Image 1: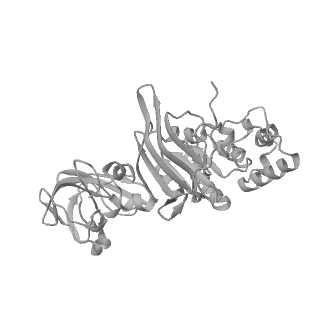
Image 2: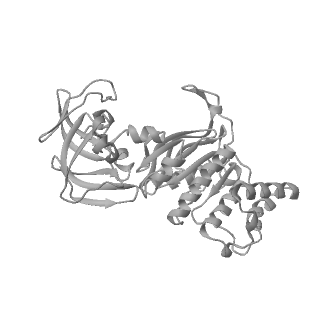
Image 3: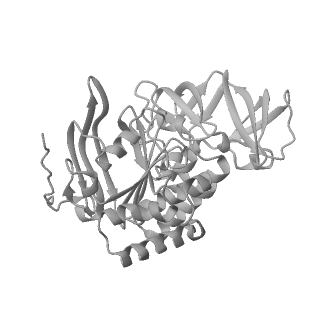
Length: 379
């Protein structure tokens, strides 16, 4: 049965200080269900024009599924998808004005790089002169001009991914979708291509929606990050906001490498207490502006714990005994126990410390995070 394609322009309306013309993609109450399994649940998302949005989460959270729904590769169960102000919920992928880059490159092995770049344009009967112009522009931006006569088998993984990006780029669309494009590459190539993708966005200023499970990619590339869990968005904010003010325990634990340290204790008279450890919460900003009392979880990032010469900036100080060391070149991670809880501390890479050493540490409670142990929401 043929599905009717709806392309009615939605009415102009205001969301905060933004009208609908400010958005490239809008997703309204989206549901996707396979049998009895709910993959996406009442999901809402607005993507600004020219924005680099990253969908971040662990495997199975629904991020690639959401991207495929936007692309039209999956039929949604309920809800609506708007691109450029038009309802494309049931439109074919070719009618959505998007370019997509896959994890697997998806290049035609029998064609040269130039053939791969021009294939879709030739099928769309784009004039030859325009095809030549688009290919030359994409090849120049991606620095693949010397590769145009080669076949994919003669390319490295990084070069193949550049070609895959180029194939999306020649379509001359406003929205690019990236489905974990760097996952198949080694660490150095990932870092190099990450810079190239960021530079590409700066040059084009197109809307880009990028799926990854790598938080470093997310933090370095994104204007905003949507952290997903079980088909829902846990937090949608700038990398800085997510890092410094995670909305809930899941986001706090997911972002950061190593992850945030958590201490389970109690707040009494403006002080967090865990066993013999007492941490005055002076300067901490509560979400609703009012101080709390009762059970709480205090989160502290390893890099926010200071040692040595930096202790002068700390308002809370205590001592720990080093149990394990991980030298990482620029940093040294030490593992210890604080108030009966295992913690990790990030120190300078040249720090002279050994297992069994007693180290004085300090931190500022204003840089900590507090969570409700029942709801797991930020306090």
